[in-house]
Length: 90
Image (cartoon, rainbow, N blue to C red):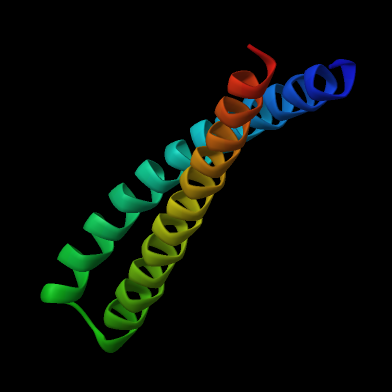
């Protein structure tokens, strides 16, 4: 039983670390969305350089959205493992 408890505590720590990563990545994503919004507006009436910037910022947004989705998926998998261990324990 002690082994299961240790695994649960380890999973809790991993979940807490992921929560922090999710919070930070979400904040960065919001900042990138604002930058991208400005870049897209500039590109609408701007130069080819503005359009290049807009493509780059959009790529950053897409990359961070995927990273955030991956983190959330990892967190959900860890929560399921934790729940299964709790059921075995209780």
